[in-house]
Amino acid sequence: MTTTESRPAGRRPAQIVDMSWDPITRIIGNLGIYTKIDFANREVVECHSTSSLFRGYSVFMKGKDPRDAGFITSRICGICGDNHTTCSNYAQQMAYGVKPPKLAEHITNLGEAAEYIFDHTIFQDNLVFVDFCEAMVKATNPGVLARAERTDAPRGDIHGYRTIAEIMRAFNPFEGEVYKEALKVSRITREMFCLMEGRHVHPSTLYPGGVGTMPQPNTFTDYLSRLMRVIDFVKKAVAMNDDVFDFFYEALPGYEEVGRRRILLGCWGAFQDPDVVDYRYATMNEWGRAMYVTPGIIVDGQLVTNDLVDINLGLRIMLGSSFYEDWVNEEPFVTHDPLGNPVDMRHPWNQTTVPVPQKRDFQGNYSWVMSPRWYHPGTGEHLALDTGGGPLARLWSTALSGLVDTPYVKATGGGVQITLPRGEKLPETTLEWRIPKWSNTLERDRARPYFIAYAAAMALHFLEEAMGMLKSGDTKVYENFEVPDEAIGCGFHEAVRGVLSHHLVIRDKKIANYHPYPPTPW
Image (cartoon, rainbow, N blue to C red; front, side):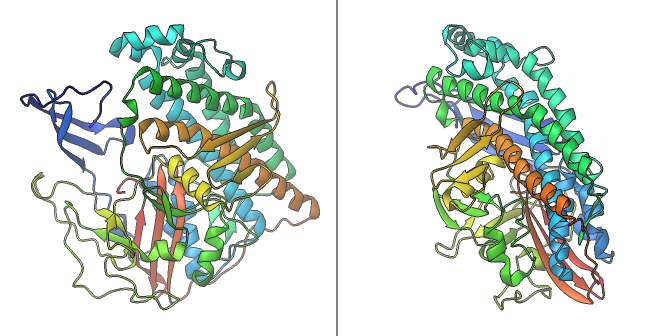
């Protein structure tokens, strides 16, 4: 339900209209939304989300060499293939018992940081901000645009625009200067990515046990020079977004309800600390908390856990309204985790995928996506966790845990401080994202430019570490391993849009079971 004005007393006779959007192209054409909307009372009466695509990776990966898993699963998505490769390698490294060299971890982190900056910039500035640009607001709410013309931009000294309307004009598709500059930034950040991971978006240099990237001085200086070219753009983007979103709250009372939902946020963590991580399940709690984006589950604003073992054991895959057979009566692949904890039959390690194609029925089954949930041991609820598009959950979880403390990023308990160095024009700047009142559309959008700044700041940290190792002569980037006859592994990472996990079972040196869970089903 959304409102942008005061609701009249009492209810009006219903005026229900069937409306559907299928495909929704911002999510690679596989999402459909089917609704019944009561326009008289401004309510969504009924809503179903569907996916018309059967991916089937968990089916055809059975029997494959597990070392191929990263290359295969990167093809799951044409947007975040590197996130899948990275997460797959994390799961394989647990199964093989191998720890990549420290420099390899920094290279992987640098590649992932570039991907976050690239993706969130192009998504925020070239897709999301179309909803707030001058052309859109002029067509849908001209009174708001007139007010924007009269409203000074509080952070104009940073981004250079005098009024809110000037910012909106700068985001007009194909014409606005920020819109066009964001496209240039996407090219530069893709180059940064390719310096570390070889190819965008399906990496050619990431392997279990390390990387194939040659660690030469120009590898890191070329990355750094590109990062410094976009550092001022990042500072300005945060200021512009803050100005516009603060304006919308003020200009449209009630807008905080747009997209608002219960605060149920999940983050699986990102950016491994190579001094702590060893990929052993027995120590997963320790190296999970050492990640430079802290994992966590947040319920009604409270941090329930940041323990990756707890997060893993709580995963449940429910059939929901999907076209699959149940597997609860099958033989489990994993009865207990390496610490002796029982593993539920609905856990990804035990899932069996048996597709049952059928006609879509909104009173029965209508989607190719199952329903992942997290079981809350304290309440017995199966929680449908949200990611806030990725950045909101990451910042919220990191802030509440208060564990990240680097020269560039510090979690404070109530927020995250991000320090970016002097760029071509703007001075050194410290930004602070604060935990908001709501989990709604504007705060999901606001979190995205802040996480771009977060990723850029952490990239500076990884660069300093990597270049220090290079100067000392520590250039090892790969560790040998043997594929065991039998093993299990799990990987936890953050895809650009949120939580990503890979669960692997090996028998007779082959994949016996494999289940990747990206943000889409959540």
